[in-house]
Each structure stands twice: as structure tokens, then as C-alpha cells.
Image (cartoon, rainbow, N blue to C red; front, top):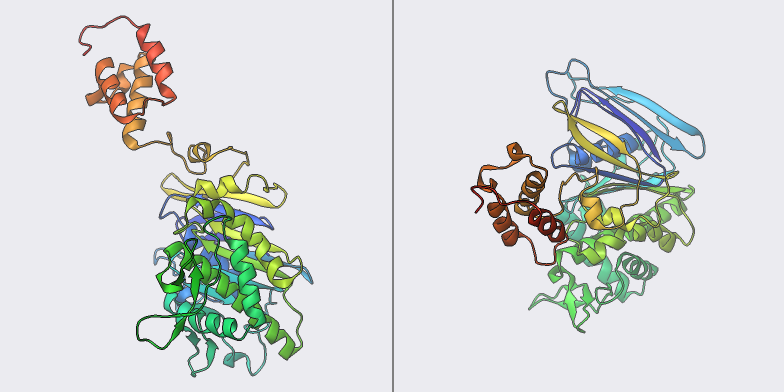
Length: 425
């Protein structure tokens, strides 16, 4: 499991961190552009010594010394910690030779549909044959669906379209696993993901996987919604990763992974609220469904969704889980651990420190209410030019608030007690 990260001279601040990760659930919130995805990229590199999507982190030329300090825990041999100092002449982050492999599988789901997997049985090798082994499996969105080949024409993965149909027609154990994972990741009710029969598109003789919709039709997966495609792709790659890991362990005599680390960027992307409030608890159950045993899972999730955080309130344990927020402080991005407190619903999460809205409303409604509050406390200096009077404020409240809004009783009671002032409209 990843324990900590500290960045110096690279990233959105001169010093970024330290970030002390919890062993189970880790949520990273913050505005766009403050480094959530960057932090996930660094976490992936720290665990695998590879760069997802092949894009390394390069410090600005103004940084005289840049370093990444990271630590991870190993259930077999204790903790490992290291500092890598960027070597600008080689454009590399050197690491110690013989660094131990973590005892688990690392998976990184990108927000753009890309996917990376690192397997200690397939990607960690020492000796003369190490150069011939792939350092990680990095999929573009297109490769997830159509397969991944190595530089020497080696086929690492046949892709979702081929494998899904092959497993289904052959009644392979992997297809049973796929059904289990799809069921675990699906919300209950009408949106439950259930494989349909393979279908053909037009005159194309190629068979495509399908999903059985709530209205009874089998729809080709490539024509399903973006949310369904993302969940289906995630389910397939989890099954593929674990299946190939198990086969590699059998071939090499290695022991199966003792832990799983999931890195997921914007886990809520494309998902309906019904799915958003179930996906994190579901991922905790997925590996148990795949392996048939309880494998420790560490989730490191970047999210913009208050519903995702609301969904984990019943399961959140401060001993194993944490919420981080990245904000601006004196023009520098700063990551901080947020004190855990149940907010109860999405509205309260939106106005919490994790998301920072002053009002869970439209911008216009927020401005009108703030003007109304300033009027009620007699603070004319705080009134915007267009909302300079009680009448103007009332007219704007009428425009932007529904009749049942909870702010109305307070406004009506307070303003009826005020005497009419000259200039009131």
C-alpha cells in the first residue's frame, strides 16, 4: 500500500505534501488545475516506476533541485522509502537498483478512458530477461476495446470486444467473473448491467458484446451510454488483469497478489447519480467477487462529486480512510487532510470545505441571498450595484428562487419588520 508522497520543486507548488495516505479509502478533492490528476500520476510512478500514458513529470527549469519522496508498505518485509532527485541532463527520475516489488496489483483508471495495470508476476523481473518484459500495461482508450500489442508484435491483450465474446461463447470461467463484477458495479434496479447475446452491426461479420437493457433489447456495448461503457471497460480490465495475473503466477510458481491498489481519476465521470452513490462501496467488493477471498484494497480516488463522498458515510472509518483537499494558499497549491464529519446529504457536502461552495445554488441565487442577508443586517456597503434596495433584492429573489425555498420565511419575516425607507422600490 502507498503510505506517503512529498514533492519538492515539481508539481503545483514548491513543496507539495507530505500526503500521508490511509490504508483503505483516500479521496482527493479540489478545484480543476490544482494537481489531483498529477498526484495520481506520481502515485502510479512511485508504485510501479513507470509513467502512465508514457508522459513523465518534468520539473520547471527554474527548479534547481527537484525530488519525489515516497514510501509504501509491504506486508512481507515492512516499509520501503526512497527519494528520487530529478537528473535534468538525462530527463530521468533515477531510483535505486533492486528496489523491492510491492506484493500487489496496481491499477490506474484515467478519466479519459485510458487504463494502466502493473502486475508483480508479469512486470517485475530481475536478471537478463528483465528488458524483455513489459514494465507495465498502458492502454489507450482505443486499446481497451481492440487490444494491446508490444513493440515486438507480442499480443498482451485481445481487447474487450474480442475477449468478451470469446469468453461468452466458450462459457469460460472469465465470463462468469465478468458477470460477477458487472453485478457488483451496477446499481440495483433498472440500470443493472447484464450481458446480452453477441450482436452484429450491419453487414460486419464481427460479433460485438451487448448489454440487455431494461426494455428487453440487447444493445451493442459500443452503442451503450458513456457511463455504461466506462463501467463495462473497468469491469473487463479488472477481470483481465486478475485472470492474467493468476495464469502468470501458475506459470512462474509465484504467489498471487496479497493486495490491490486502485488509482481512479474522477470516478464519477459519465455516471448517473444512481451509480455515483454505489460505485465506491462496490469497488471494495469487486476483488472479493473475483478472488473468492478478502484481498485488502487501497483506493486513491480523485473526485468532484459530493455524492461520492456522501455514499461512503456509512462505511467511512477514520482509522483506515481519509479525505484530502487541494486548495490555493498564497498562490501555491496546498494539500491538506480534511477533518472527517458526516454531512448527511449532497447539499451539505457542496458547502463543506471539500467543495467550498457558499451556497448550493445557481450563482445568481447565491448573489441574491447574500445581498438579502446584507440588507437584513444593515450592511449597505456589501450590496452590489444592481441590488441596492429592498425592492430590487425582492424582485431578484422572486426571479431566482422557487416559491418553496427555505430562505423565503426568513426574508419575509425580517423585511416586514423593517420600516419603509426612502428610495425603496
